Length: 427
Ligand SMILES: [Zn+2]
Image (cartoon, rainbow, N blue to C red):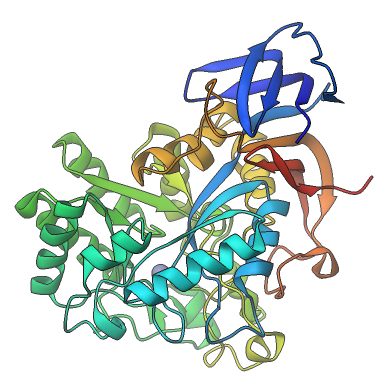
């Protein structure tokens, strides 16, 4: 592989607090030098990056690739392509496939398919319970040994507090977080957020309390066990308050928010657009604003897409029958720029920290840095380009997005994994 010199971009590396116009030299798949006026080595490819941002590749802790089981909506290969196009060099794949990723062989399958796809690092998340049935713990030692970076029954909450306690204790011995989908199923019977809009639309609602009860429980169990609980896709102001207090106490609690929860509100369900149906549901303005503030002050550590592809036909069903979730990998950065950076809520380095450096740190993953010697997982971003989201342009096999037709700001131009281009936007 020839050395690659990224010349004269705005180099943003939150891991070192760096934000400067500089060059980045990549040799043998690693960051070899960062600085101004680096001489071009013999045989190097030089790429001018004026007006562009050079940053550590984005990292998404929460995606659903549908392989095995639902390859018509996404495969590990197409999901990794979507990741690369979105500027992501690494993603963590949730285990709610068919069969569930609850054993060594299933984790190994994800690892092998990702290597074959060779577009992004795909880290498997193992199931908390066998078959995600919430009864018997999976063999965490086997899962971690085969490459799992966390455990989760996402898609479903861990209902039994005893099982959650045991999972936190057991995961602690293997040094991995338990990522929980916080939802009390006895309260969550609806198709959208419970509020004025659900009443107007005549749809059953899911109250914020359904999430907050489980957030509170998980925080209490984290304190009891000393285990690391990672709270998935936080959506309510009450959850934010609970996490803020847990962090003040110094508990091992981390949290994520999705672009749709900091961009949209339940009003988006008017018209019964099933691309606005997700779980947790879109909430109220005050909730959205609380999520934004939590991303500003670090109460919520990371932005994760919860990329959830569904077939067109499935989303064509009636609102109450349609499946939850939207694709997110190829729009996440552009939504972050439009909703957080453009209005001045977050700086661009803060956004990159929440989408790269912090995800790497809290799940103990490589990446999230441009430090010399680190693997060259790098994204070159155009932070100013305005572009319209179009279904036909997705690399994902699915296009279920409420952002179709909307204008976003900023996108990846070039994505490198181990210094190898895995995505380059056509001119
Ligand atoms: Zn979930």
